[in-house]
Image (cartoon, rainbow, N blue to C red):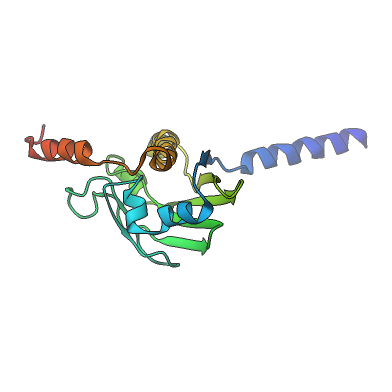
Length: 187
């Protein structure tokens, strides 16, 4: 009997480990009140102050959460084109669907989702926790996971900097994009 119980426990543990979904989890403390951080995630000016040089934002369930890392690119290749807010709990949580960068077209055809949680620390600082879920396995999924594991760290770092030193200046970024778009395509 003891052997059977042990076998069942091992089988159950293996099933739990197998079913655990991989996720990217990042956290940062931002030196700003929750209301200001909420505005950063839910307005065009807010997104453009730390996340991307251009955005289309409509902060409602089903509303646009279009993040254009390359505003000069063709539609569909600007970045997180056609993403949507999935849920909003004012001053506490927001979520949106997400896709892979254009350089990973197979994974880009699918969608993952991101949950951002805000927690007041002392009325002057906010803990921002970001969780990115919905990953497939192998191939471009693994490359996409690695890409966003790094990228979300930069995004949250830029959010913190936005309140420490001011909004992001996208001038150099845009100048580099202009140069890249002006260069002839390499074969």
